[in-house]
Image 1 (cartoon, one colour):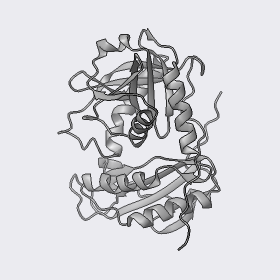
Image 2 (image 1 turned 30 degrees about the vertical axis):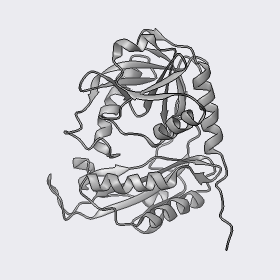
Image 3 (image 1 turned 90 degrees about the vertical axis):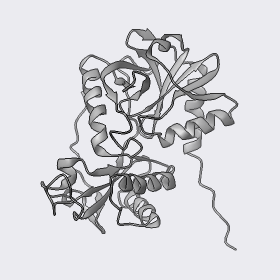
Length: 300
């Protein structure tokens, strides 16, 4: 049985609003707008060998996400990157996860809160693996198609990493867990294949990769990395519409995400898949990439 370690009762440090605080002291007011109305954005970043992978891309997206929710992160890009590294060092994390988060505070309690203070915090903890397939590592993840769907992009800022959007994934994954699956497969509002509860999806047929067009869901940084990596390795990758009835025709399925990394899918509903050679090759290539030592520029 897995021992639950509460996230509010840990040793370590969290940077919050300009100060590095003891972990248990980093708190927010119960009437914060971000808690009540979802006016919060965040990032999830992996640390490999003490280095945050794709830190620049994640930091830039945090700023864009705030802008999409009509608020400005009160930090420069450099400050975000510097604090991200500081919190990794303060917690002595070699391989783990960084969570920057920004939210509207408690000055106003209404749907509209333009005068609310924007708060920012950075936490970091050890997190070696995200998925543990119930059927075993050699079987891959089991996904169950969810009744919940990714929304029309005119109803939500789907390219922001906004906390409110993740309610859909939470509900979908809870239902999948209760049904004995590892995760959920979500369709979009048009009934097309979208992604899992929090990871992007790739399918393989006759040596070619296909991945849904990110119209209704986040175009993940890991997704973009895998597309480039696969093309550099000589694979053809097509961003296209995938309908649920096509899923039985694919040879391999895998999902990608900062937390998930590259995770093979062994089953979607009643359709079973082998963990194939392309999934294995990309899993290895991605693992090698994230652990490459960053290049240093010699002093002039």
